[in-house]
Image (tube, rainbow, N blue to C red; front, side):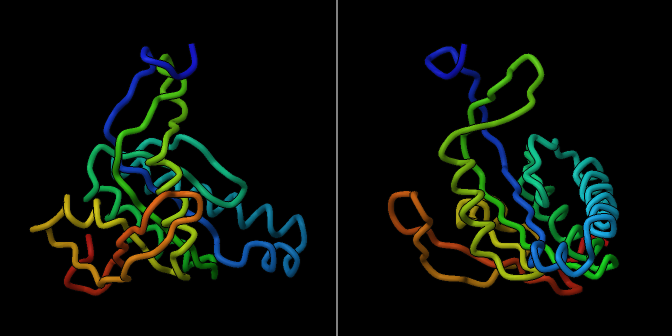
Length: 178
């Protein structure tokens, strides 16, 4: 059964990643070298997601969707991904939101859906190169943690009602996970 009252819902932190300028990179590198770069990118991102206790739920060409039970773990993972992929001479943008999601395949836990997922995708779309952008929901949940944020102000998220306060992770040595 898809959706409806019987659908399994859970609270999750959703992280979206996206390679900045992927089309330009692919065109410049050619298919074979681009595929190799993507394979290396995928290996790095999968490793970091697993290392921080996340679960990959979907891939979208040059990006990932992962869920975490802890917003702090998602933030730390995102922070490390930004650094790790820099070795490949690429940049990623990352967006993080927390909310209730619907598990689309409860027997395998393979995908999630719902408004919270769309919000996460829209947050990612507004992130700049090598930036981790979070919703104020995430920022509020991790209040008191070592993570520090700068206000990005209220933004419209395409297709999502209302205005959403977004915050960028301050990526300095004082907040690093290493």
